[in-house]
Image (cartoon, rainbow, N blue to C red):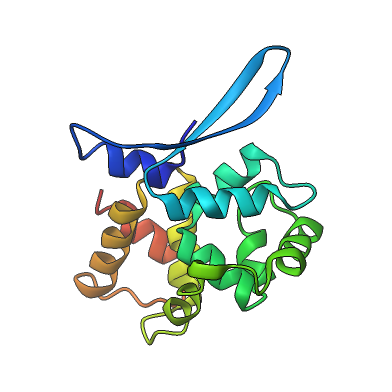
Amino acid sequence: LVSLNTLSKLSQQTEAQLFIVSVYVRDDNPRFYGFAEEDERELFRKLISVSGVGGGSALLMLSSLSPAEIAGAINTANVTMLKSIKGIGDKTAQRIVVDLKGKMGKHEGGISQILTTSYNKNKDEALLALVTLGFPKAAAEKAIEKAVKQQGIGTDNVELLIKSALKNF
């Protein structure tokens, strides 16, 4: 099993090295999780160490947001961003923040990414919606930027931003 971020990186290559983690062995049915980057695997391990977060939930989180975005949300206690991920409720998001805040190690770069001038909550919500619909994150980012620049769409209306971005696919 791989995250959407890993899958998009692998689809562009003819050869790949995966970092594998075996997490669950139930009824002689092991589940293996693969990651294109070691950072993503380490974040996965940290996420599954939190009570209530299993391999599927951690993989869904890594499919919805980049490791830097997840780390930034944890380090800044942005429970709202974590709750926006399908399957992550309020209590689980709070537990993730409490258990992992300050323990992100090399994933701390997420804070500067969130605080950049290009940060916009509505853009993030539109991006998360497109990724949840199954679009690759990189393509969704480009479609949103294209909608903002070429079509003159403002970022104050998330629904309009999503509709305009969908026209760019």
